[in-house]
Image (tube, rainbow, N blue to C red; front, top):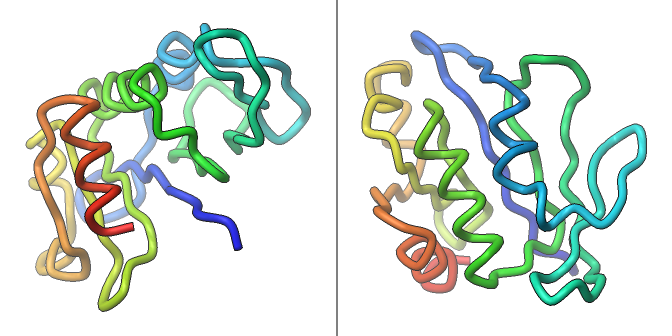
Length: 138
């Protein structure tokens, strides 16, 4: 069974978009290859891993999914950097309801009323914080 995480942008209660270049810049050192649907990731030491980042084509994207995320500091820092610059929520399946985190408080103003209640949500201030929250709830 695979653990996947999902990054979703929000804008005034609906799905939002952000510049794909933000993700490309953040993950550039972790991309091992790509295909039409996304990027194969590698570990910071250059070794391949089984992680895959599924991302849309085009200049603006609604978010992305990471299959089998490598919960290592370089990956978490790259993910945090994307979240810090965008109005996004990172979420994943959990026991009672989906767990989620955000790094940019402005995203809370973009959610539909009561939408935050759909998640067990945490504000994170770093990749380390995010990794701890994922480990505690994932």
